[in-house]
Image (cartoon, rainbow, N blue to C red; front, side, top):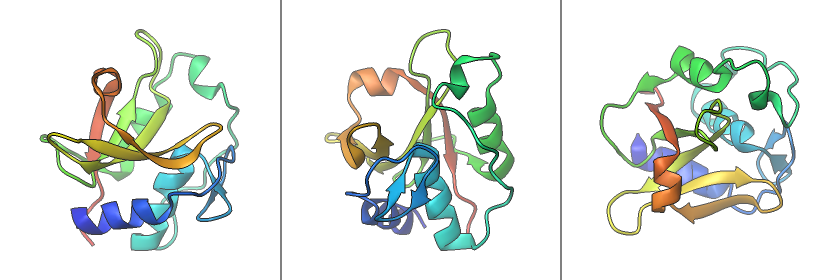
Length: 141
């Protein structure tokens, strides 16, 4: 399934960044990208997403994104293309960004929705790698 997840993620590249969006070609944020890929493989989302603000991860200190990923995705003990990566943008802050691992090894990359850039594929550089707070997999279809 990992190749199918990567292909699905790459199909979203070029989608504009829209906060709380989750529609390929129209607009998505990082969570919306993962939600859209879920719908592509499994149909309806497992729970209704409540509204959230751009700074939702900076208040309250609760790991909402990691907890949500753990509820619906499988833990990934090793690194494989198609994994859902969850990032902590600052040391001590809660995790609030996510993307799909597209390539491993030399030239490792991930697909994510990034403010002012839209859905892009970026190198999984050392600074990005250091921010990984969790790694998950979609359940088998």
